[in-house]
Picture 1 (cartoon, rainbow, N blue to C red):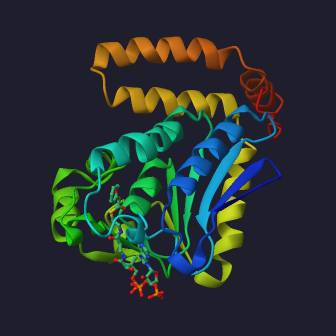
Picture 2: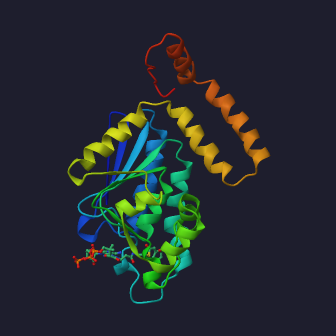
Picture 3: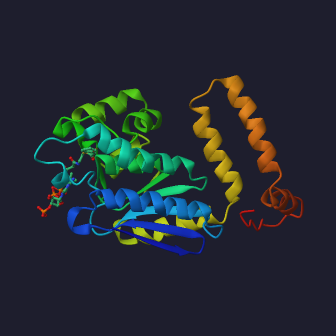
Length: 255
Ligand code: LHQ
């Protein structure tokens, strides 16, 4: 239900049920978790690009699987979604969401769990949970207020209103919007650029910033000192300083 392909340092994970708007099934949840683990342990992978096949990014849980009542919602989340979302955080490489079309419900939550969000001008985002009487899940109540602030987060979650890529850019929900015709190339170029940067340093930035959200200033300062010890011992740090002194462009290897 997904495609996984590595080229030029970028692992592209494509959710691949285009006829269902890439809606999640148990199999897809598992495959995404496994693909992220694979990308984490592959040294040649220095950036992950997460996207959807066809017209949509992802329409959330496949509602065909949960219609008819008697669903153990909590169990569903604990078994299928929560481990997948945690894996996004455990992956110490940059994860870029390439939002090619609509992102709804848990599909939006997954985009929020990525580190950077790029969107096609044709994309739209909908916090669809309330439209079926549910609560934002899969990290939707964690990431959304941290990204756009509590005021906008509550508005989007309570109204379930669909917003355009342009509006999402305006409120800081996404980072960049590109023309639909060139979107795939633009997103890939962005990911390749990230893949050419100091990968271990970026992994440490990711971990330290997300940790900083949970900690006070003193603890964060201490964690920064710890992370800097690790970053400062990388080859890429040495190369960065050497290149600067030699007035040339750095050649980072990710080590
Ligand atoms: C779909 C879906 C879909 C199946 C579009 N399933 N087929 C939930 C429950 C339990 C525990 C765990 O957590 C969760 C997490 C969640 O994600 S809850 C939220 C689930 N998602 C939604 O409620 C979104 C439902 N979909 C929509 O609101 C719309 O389809 C969106 C806004 C995504 C797209 O609208 P349109 O562009 O107007 O397209 P469409 O509605 O015509 O959909 C296209 C096709 O995709 C259509 O199939 P068809 O055979 O008629 O062409 C839809 O039935 C199918 N589809 N979402 N979630």
